[in-house]
Image (cartoon, rainbow over all chains, first blue to last red):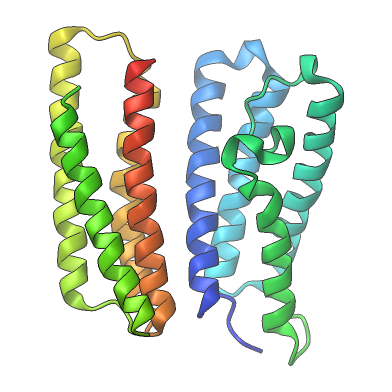
Amino acid sequence: MRPTSGGFGRLLVLVYGVLALAATARGAVQVATAFHEAPLAYALSLVSGLVYGAATWALATDRRRTAWWCVGVELVGVLVIGAVSRVLPGDFPDQTVWSGFGSGYGYVPLVLPFVGLGWLWRTGRSGPDQ
Amino acid sequence: MIGALVALVVVASLALATWAVVFVVRDRAVVLRQLWAAAVVEALLLVQGVVQAVVLVRTGHAVSVPLFFGYVAAGLVLLPLAAAWAFAERTRWSSVVLAAAALVVAFLQLRLVQVWAG
């Protein structure tokens, strides 16, 4: 089993780190300055940032189990929130990383979980998933 | 906002990105001299952040302060972390990481201009 942080994994961790920084900082500013305007969306914004942060850490330190969970949560998050924000745009100001399937971030949040899961699968093939 | 300073940071970070891409093509890892170059870009980022803060205070320009300095801080935090992360890898992916980080720094400058414009 290869470490998740080597080779292409270096770049993956960087991209995750940048997204974690962007989402967490944005969520923190939103929650701190305008929480009452859209509590759900802004709390979600912050939570998504923390999940990206956890994924960055897990991928960087080769914690596969945590990484699988975090990347899985991101995939579900971007698909569910992306769909909800399309169906009920009024309830979801276009202000989270996952709104509109991540369209505000060049659809990186939509593509990244697939890449992350693919990478975890590829690096973990030769051994048990632990 | 002092446009020349933004342009200088963008040119410096794009130069660093280009240098790293050359290393990717040549299948080489990041070398110490590139870390020094990244340190120069970091110093420029710091100078530009301080200067924009002074300009902001003196002109009373209306801008979202947490947003603006969030982008300033993001670049300052990202570059050293990414450079160290790149340097620890000893394959060509090391250079890919440095190139990507330098491009993100350049992109953050563009966002900075947008935030300033409102």
